Structures are given as structure tokens and as C-alpha cells.
Length: 64
Image (cartoon, rainbow, N blue to C red; front, side, top):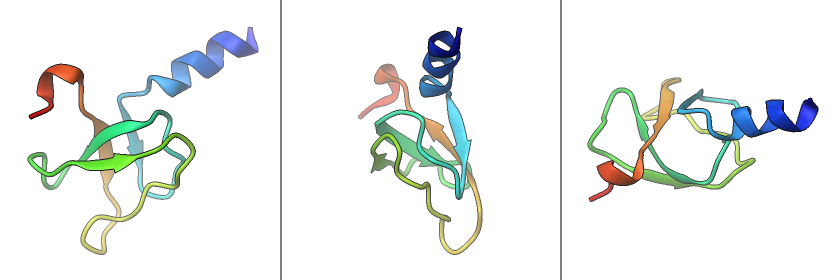
């Protein structure tokens, strides 16, 4: 059961500043969706321009 719960967490589409990144990849802040940042799984997500934000993982189809 625990393994299934962990898999769901890894594929979370969003995470907030100060939490651990659930999956490696390209992430965009809500305030600036055209900007991308690379974060690795387990890395603490930073603030964006000095303010807390929600980071959203970009899907493969969104990458440019």
C-alpha cells in the first residue's frame, strides 16, 4: 500500500515553495508560466522573485 501512495506523490502536477520536488523535470511558477526551471526529485522548491509560489510540472507536450 505504501508503495502505491509514494508513486502518486511522485507524479504530483504541482508543489508549493518550501516543499520537496516530487519528480525531476521542468517546472513553472504560477506567476510566470512561460518561464521554466529544472528541479530534481527531493530538491526543496524555492520562492519565485522573493515570494512563495505554486510550481507546476510541465508535461512533455508543453516543452519548447
